[in-house]
Length: 114
Length: 111
Image (cartoon, rainbow over all chains, first blue to last red; front, side, top):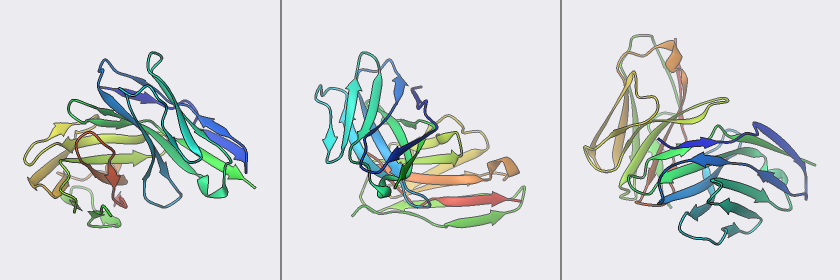
């Protein structure tokens, strides 16, 4: 089965600055999808951004962008102009394109400081 | 909007009880998932289902079973609840080949 590793249990950033969260994965599949999810304190998990493995271009959603390095099996999330509302747990996820088995990393707790 | 509804937000059960956690989605999604979330461990996949009556084991299926008799409903069953199953349980659903949508979670305490 695929494994997803997030090596930063906790991170903090000053408001308005940029932060990068790391994620690596291990798979022998060629067809897959990658996601970053956000879980605010005591609130529901929501999608931040997604990347299809067959696309070379890095995905971008407003202040959120990814650096997808397929050969290195790396999928980092960059948050620009950090806001207090970005404070949350962030989870990296891998979806197998064949059977849609979906696995998550252990998460990174991000705190944005005023 | 996609809605994934879990039957209970909080649940307290006794050791040895049979526990049912229900999840319903309203968007005709093929895939449904049950995860367990524990601090420092992230989300661990218990079971997932890609079609009615179909199921696949995840990383931690021991002590759990699932049922998917209808496309919109995916039930997680703890056959004989134990204290080490005290956790947050998250249900999710997705169409084929795209992101999953999550329910609000069920915090289960086994005493």
